[in-house]
Amino acid sequence: MSTFKTVDDMQVSGKTVLVRCDLNVPMKDGTITDTTRIDRSLATLSELVDKGARVVVLSHFGRPKGHVVAKMSLRPIADALAKKMGKDVAFAPLLIDVEIIIIPSTIKSSLATLGTVIYKVLPAGTV
Image (cartoon, rainbow, N blue to C red; front, side, top):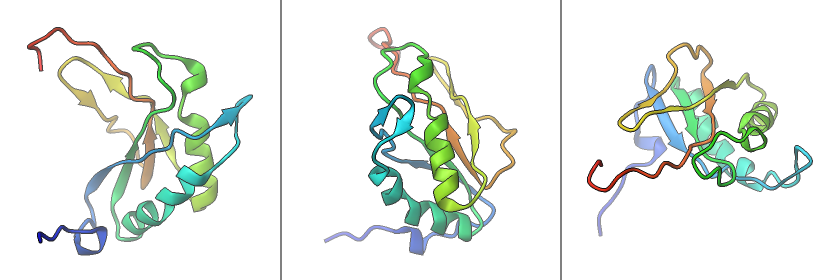
């Protein structure tokens, strides 16, 4: 049986760590109705921040079908994450091009949430 590393085994101080979280929480009229998915991410995110990592959270909200949809913004989820962690959580829109994902370098917080990942249909053979 193979072994794999956990957060406990990683030396992350001074490094930027990209964490993919399932933060696609149910919302009604702009209010989160169930924070379970956020709550389940807290231990990992807190441990990384406590170890000195700069944590960038990547997630999605809804299915925007290749378009920017304001009501599918992760900003309310970033705000809820900040409240639960008791820390500032920067929010940065995710900029996507066909070949590169750009994480804004201006984020100074120890924890940041990127905007919704936008699904793109690419021509066959481009990836």
